[in-house]
Amino acid sequence: MKLTPFHDRTARLNRRQMWFNWDEHVVPDAYDDLAAELRATRERVSMGDMSPLSKYEVRGPDAPGFIDRLVTRDTSTFEVGQVMYTPWTDENGKVVGDGLVFRVDANAFRISADPQLLWFGRLANGLDVTITDLSHGYGLLAIQGPASREVMDALTGETWEDLSFSRIRTTTVAGAELTVARQGFTGELGYEMWVPAAAGVAVWDAVATAGLPFGIEPVGEHAIDVARVEAGLLIVGADYTGAGPDRPGSTIDMDDAHRASPFELNLDTFVDLGMDFVGRDALREEQASGGPGRRLAGLVLDHGRVLDLHAGSPLLSIPDRVWWYPLTLTIDDRPVGRATSVTWAPTVGRLIGFGHLDPDLAAVGTEIGVRWTLHAGDDVVAARVVDLPFLELRRSL
Image (cartoon, rainbow, N blue to C red; front, top):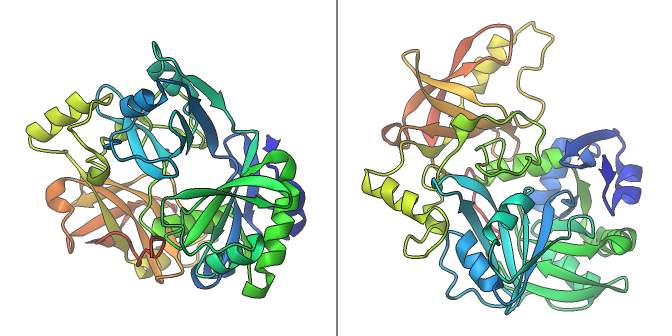
């Protein structure tokens, strides 16, 4: 396992010495207390090490054409300085991966996502582009929370109020030039900084110092994972199986039955069937044949029933982190779908997750069962379909 550019600082702060294996790296899972770290993100400001995300640069005369071939979105208005969240699909219309695409120049883009080098290389065949893996050259530091803008102002001596959501700009911190995107995986106002690896410790220290008056705290992977579920955001591996040839960044077993189209994952907003991307024809056929065979929905589970099932058991009553493996959804003992990313959500005080269901069952208010196999028995826990996300998103305000 590799260490991130911020490890010298995160290791000192990780009082519980709880670590999470993320792709080739280890990052703190929880520095001290999950609820406190999540609360800092929701109420003040936090700083999190997201460095294990793979990072790529696509550069060359055909780079815009490569992006057109890759992403499912309309790129005709994709400007320099803009960030685009997008999925990308294979020839069968199944999602290979999703991530952020940054346009840094007319013929240069950066991408952060799960490992995708083999897939990108396949799509670049015949194009005049160079794809460079920047994953180990940069750390990724996320500053998230209501006070994140004030921290950025104090950190740089600049005003960040004019940087709109999904836009980027460069700045200098601790003598290092950084690319900063107004983005984040928590649903809160926030910024993600691409930090040259050699400057990792110096930039971490500068952010921590600038954030001190605002109550900034380091946040581990566990709290970030819970925050993204509360915000209704998916990850490859836990919520769908990537359809591409690359190894997954997660350590869980992948199941081809969990491959999904963007429409099955409620990513309709990010698909333009008028564009000529890989997988477009298959997605057109899916729509023409009546639409996706399943839909993503929010689930709220009866956590009281879960506590009853575990009464007197030495096992934890609720998973001690986001449960990435699928649980079977049922109606009258008949399997009708699966639940993913089930977790206790401290911000909303509920046991939540994502449901992958027949479209008719994905309507808000549908009562459904979750086969609770996280203990010695095989009982069913009641759940109800709700709207996503589970809380108000403030990242674009």
